[in-house]
Image (cartoon, rainbow, N blue to C red; front, side, top):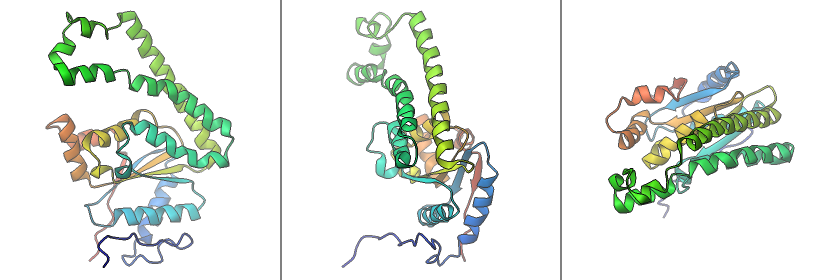
Length: 259
């Protein structure tokens, strides 16, 4: 007895050969679109759960590979056991190590180290909040809280250094992408983000926006916008999720529903 769903086997040479919904024409339209996004960007494939988004993006990925595009596929749901989305995303780039000078990848990693260190500076204070409460941790008279407060000049210096680190990381990443994909953009698929725990889903979006947004990378988010909106509200409360997502998504596209 078979009780688990099995993914459709996709022929790498003819990725849409088994598509009974005739969706290859939509992949062709989207491929023409990304050819014109010379500065990179973020496209969202927005359809409800169960409408075949994952199968479509995997078929489209095969179509792009056959048209000499470099692609990456990241299933966010399968990776949300990670505590840090930044590390998970940057690890995907290792797929290209054999195609480029290893020094380029090593340079990206070295530029990422200061950012990763900055991302974990708040861990100790967070642990205090869990044990003693936010008021205690934030109390300026608390000796424990004071131990985590640096002089203002140190904070300013840290802010400047972080901005510099982000720029250096993005420049290094752009150089790696150009070396890999040459004249065509690298297509980075992010799937199942709307099924992740809310905090991880938000972190993936924000890392894409603030760190990985460089010329030469086009992110394709496979999402159910309504479900993702619920995750956003879980983290930020009652906000306008359409306005929030507009900060991250440049183009929205929905696969037409079959009869």
